[in-house]
Image (tube, rainbow, N blue to C red; front, side):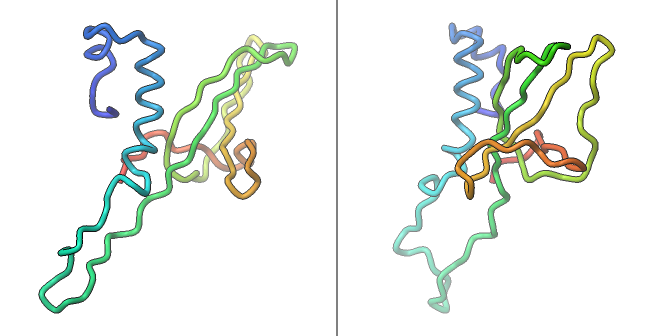
Length: 126
């Protein structure tokens, strides 16, 4: 789904909100543990079991927007790769700002991306 332009789906009658939900849900399904199953004849001539390359991490992120007085102004979720070093988004001239959070499986909760790191949005699914 990530390679299908959103406009093409909308032209088929899929609403914009459903396009977002389809694309968000397709990445974990496509790269999840059940996406690629081993077949019984999946070994080389020497009889050794083939190993697949390690998968890149897929992280669930959440953008949270805030008004100048600190009230929540909306959010959106996306999937991406592991965080990289970088600067957080700055406060806009009108006082609004955005925070990026990620789902930490160890804590089973959402955690703000630490200072000095940014979310990687353009991660290619494996």
